[in-house]
Image (cartoon, rainbow, N blue to C red; front, side, top):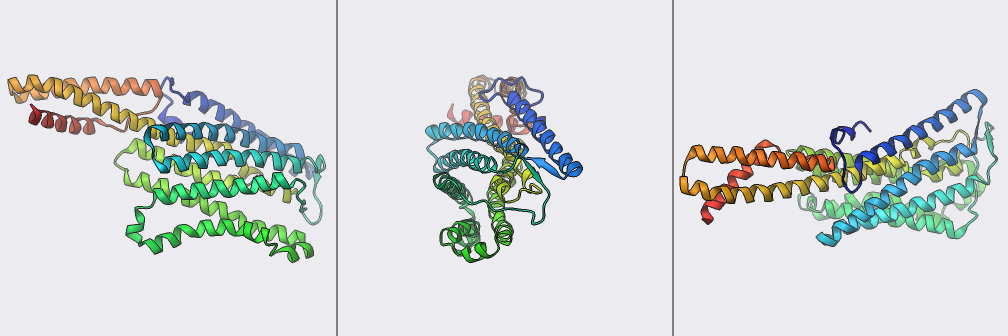
Length: 378
């Protein structure tokens, strides 16, 4: 949380998403989750058991926050797509939507199964149970939304990184980016074809462990790939520190999101509740993605406005400069424009809590360029 806060803590937030208020809400959710997790840990250590309701509380708290934030992100992506008509933005919007839908089905599915378990889970030999599906429609909805959300995010990432295909070679590039997708889809193919049915019937306990160890990593690998896309952007715009910072935040968010979206494992490992701490990051990861992408967009919008202002002032003042033709006057104009632009930049930051990526050197460089272009036009 502290990784994000410094960028907006000094501002009086009045932007559309109310980032300051959102930060406080997420902080409350995380403290709540931390308290519940601590309670579960103490129960296990002191009494060798825990209450099932604790699992439901952690999952519901984390996933409800994620659903809200992913829905907001979806609306922002669709809003940007209306004005931009960029296919990558559309794919990320659809991916965010499906991630939210998948989170909803996950909460319902896991909650339904957990309610069938005893209210108290005690330590016992064997360590785990495997619960058969009780709602085929719900399970199918969960699986389909998982597949669609992964594929859409994968497709958006592949297009975002497409320029690397020239550097790596198209065949090599597609082989590399296809590995996470094939690995992820293989778990569903094996399930639909019942390839592990004999193993499940002979030893359900071993099957649960094997299946979890092999395929639980598929989302993690995919998340790393999705994060790499934003890390790459951050690296390419390292000179633009502000936007680069927000891209890194988004990268961490995508990695954490696909790592933490594992609530389904709770129904196969009742004691101890492996994965409980992991899913507690679901809401936080969604917040990282939302803030990173939204703040980047706002920062870019600030830059566009500042460029427009600089050019406007350059045209206005260059008329005077053209008639006087003094180097000293050019310096004076530069100082006046710098003062006005800095005031505008500060005002934008006050209104949105997002800092422009334009620093003083960028402003001077663009101003001089605008003055030169204006002189040629006069």
